Length: 312
Image (cartoon, rainbow, N blue to C red; front, side):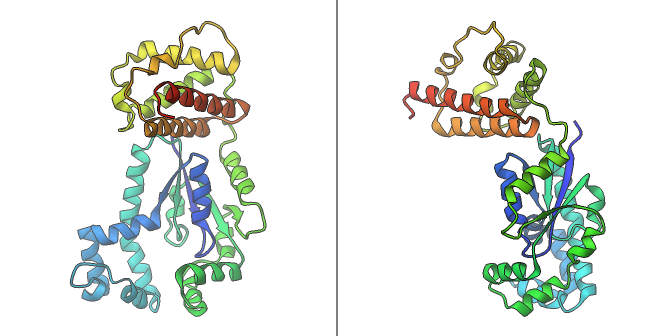
């Protein structure tokens, strides 16, 4: 299955993290490049060695901790050092992202990164979305968030490309200015990159839902112990029959789906995890009224089963 890789970028204070949180609540998978870079700077012995060679021994303190303030002072006063530092870090981050894409079940993977264009990394993505906001809004956000002076923030901004320069590459733009509705813009972008999302109104659609969901279940460390004993050649067709009965009104399913789960030693957190995984699968693959119907019915099944197990 080909996975769609989407780069999500924007200048400091544009609100990339907020857009990412919206995407995650919609069920999408997000890889955070900037957080990964910070982790690697502290944990990768090879990267540490390379940074010390570039910046000097004071790049890390006597306990091996990254000297953020010192390194920042060096690189933000020397654009060549900053570019060299980025060239050291980003191959490590890209390797982590490639591994992340390889092991995830998600059909779409978002990669949040501040400098996709500056590093040339944008070339490896199927689509880019640029998050923007007015300059003064960005500065105010950074002053509140990072407790920095306006001058310090402006110096950081000088080391990033302007939104105007990034727009030359024709990315999809989301304006996060607190005025334009953010959720609507994110939903429009998702529709833009997935014009062929299915409607969940045929048996073929439901087979895709069931097969994809259980493939996730069998890779999920929390849920797999409850399902690993099943004969899926028998179980999956029954689940398809059940959801066909629920969503498109076909006949033929007569088993009590709740009674089948009462022998399992399930707890509240197992049901919550099951619902989250099921909803995520729905949102990745489908749009339309039947998606909400499936979510509501799954909640009812979970609630009723928990009641019978005295978990409510």
